[in-house]
Length: 476
RNA sequence: CGGGGCGUGGCUCAGCCUGGUGUAGAGCGCCGCGUUCGGGACGCGGAGGUCGCGGGUUCAAAUCCCGCCGCCCCGACCA
Image 1 (spheres, rainbow, N blue to C red):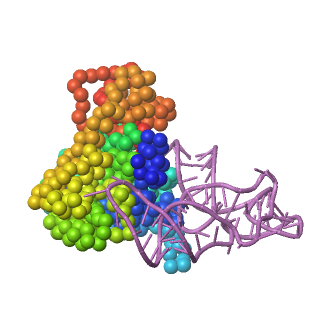
Image 2 (image 1 turned 120 degrees about the vertical axis):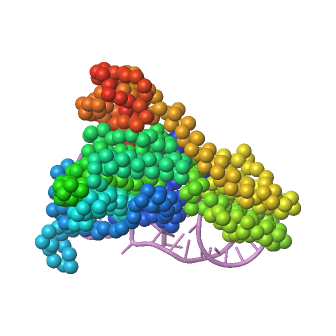
Image 3 (image 1 turned 180 degrees about the vertical axis):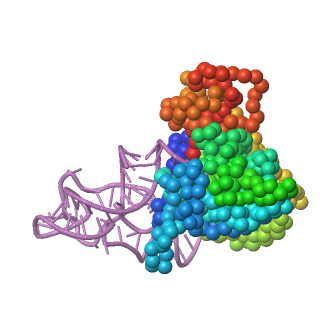
């Protein structure tokens, strides 16, 4: 076990805070609730960003940038929206030393400004659909901040689209949910449940909110991305209209969807172990670290030559040669394990003699994860093993989720189930039952999964006829 | 906002209860030199602190009293 790192089983929350800071992903900023994303954490975010951005482009979206400041009056135009966001707004009242005529909101999300602009830009059905994404920072004055999971300012992308018909908008919202799920599972190795938010949990101003929910290493759920069908709510509020082919004037149908730096927290909490982070290879800032081992200057020359050669051979991967000569190999092993580098290449005099290296997998601690690989097969071996680690992390996360998911029939069973993980339970879709669970257990309806079982049941809370199965869990 | 905890070198903390031990300590980290290096090395030398801030009590305050500020953790809110 890592020195100075609280075991996950002892205090998951302490483990999380320690690993985020010790692995140098992020640090607390001087302003409460704000964080500094350090280079290692930012590199991870950049990899998340590229993988998502490519998917957005592939689905026809373009990037743009809208302003940080929003006139206060804009927020008020959509009733649910203003009600939902008012408590957590940062408001600028002074600019250039003078009190502003109208206070400015620091954007908590951009539906309103973007809606305002879309109203200007959209005239005809020929202008539709508008498919825009922006990468930006937003500010929400949250009550209890936690690094990555809930910070006052955070980074995200927010997609905003406008369509001619309800069906198109609905299709877009669902498409982007698929994009998020594909990203989460295939890039981050984080298995997710696709579903719909309950009425009480949906985005302020949306008619339907879709979500992907992931299980963290303590059995709690994290909403990892959302995609909203906004119906015509914002189009009406901001007068986003178009003229159709028949000459009539119609309101657009809009969507919005986002994934944030919060997802970094999911990567940490899904894969990490008592030795620190485990980065999924496809997103890892550093995929392979080479640790040279020597006893004297002669060996050092020999080993360093082999090590830098190995680095060149592995040029297609994100590789680092740790040539710091004041640190022992054992220290470096632990250091890079804390940082979650998926694969380590050890090269010592013995390996140089044998024309081989030792590969050590981060996801299998100790000797069990080590294999000898001949130099000739290094490049292929590393490629294959990174793929194997990516797959193993996903499988492990799926297995963990299955182990911690139960299908309660009774209310007592449901209460027990949410204490240790997900409860997939029949639910009558009533807010009363949802509120009762929340009051008794702090768990909420995380989503109503797309994949619904055959047959029918009765609500595990009230016993009335259920409308479907829902995932109940404690969330972040 | 409710509950709990904490502010002392870069980090983690001891010292405070019962004021005075003389230049305020430790471990880790950091700097220099040397020996080491296949799972968190060691020796020697060194740098670094207005004890969160402001008052008060006292011959004397890190220590006692009052006020303030900040941070962390748990809950309500939330991506």
